[in-house]
Length: 394
Ligand code: NZQ
Ligand code: ZN
Image (cartoon, rainbow, N blue to C red; front, side):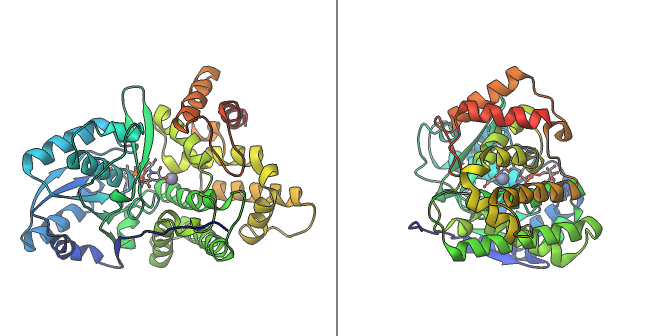
């Protein structure tokens, strides 16, 4: 068991009609001028943006707006947001949307708080010393960005998708009404479920010490997401299933499921970020497409964890060798992904990288990781390439 810190400063307001409290929550932050940041139109179509505007107006809070965030959010819009917010004297950013909108808001907030190019943070050539406060009205349960220390931005030049982690950008509040996720296409709902599972599994498949309470929380979270995801395939308007998934998304990535382990193994995410940068695939679908290949490549180095996962999460019978049980757990996970219409190979994801492109992704992935990455198994550039090749060969 490892020592740990858990820092979760986000005020969560969860439940039906929770967004009605946005004016009051922004006011409590002493904000004078808010930048409402949103995506490519879903919050306009659902009427949520109007409700947020009204709530700010009633609370007497001035605001300006910037929409247009796309999945795999772009650096160019972050720069635009920084310029706009400077010109308008913005002192608080309100993200209304999914992970991409929240991450773009975080990047703008970093860029406003300090001089210098905000991309430096994502290249890890410096650390932030300050960040403007952020609030969130969440519309997609997936990334956990509403409580997390992370943000992921894509630079169009070279299509580099990079993450920056810093406690400074953890949102001040997160408004979570599960009903707001009911307008999601089934594909995005399923992508979100995979992402939530992956944030939990990447903290679970680690070598070294672990903590029983953390393992048990992680296993319960994973079983709940699997059960609720299956419900939503049949009944997308099921409030309770939406709520279970929404709360699981926050708990999966706010640090709770990593307490007592050695920091996690985020290889699947790092491998996916290169795919998202190059092919602009949905994050959760990219994770589902690469995970099985990663798991088969590493499981022998982390056999006891894969065996435990197979039995406690996927319900595999504890008969046979540890290796057989572990492999059945991987197969059951892939079968679950397919059951919610998620891909388990590059072909199913709809991408066909050439050998040269896979070499390029592996090179960039290892460079972004500082040479190597992983805890279940430490991966170098050659290992990353081998995993991409496995996913391409399926
Ligand atoms: O742009 P709009 O029109 O809002 O449409 C979005 C977008 O097309 C749509 N959508 C969102 N809420 C909706 C809705 N459509 C209908 N009804 C609603 N209620 O869904 C599409 C995807 O949205 P996006 O925000 O891109 O999805 P997600 O929340 O999965 O975010 C993915 C991004 O977050 C990063 C990913 O890499 C990716 O760039 N991540 C951020 C993390 C973090 N900050 O901690 C951790 C994650 O591991 C992840 O890497
Ligand atoms: Zn993720």
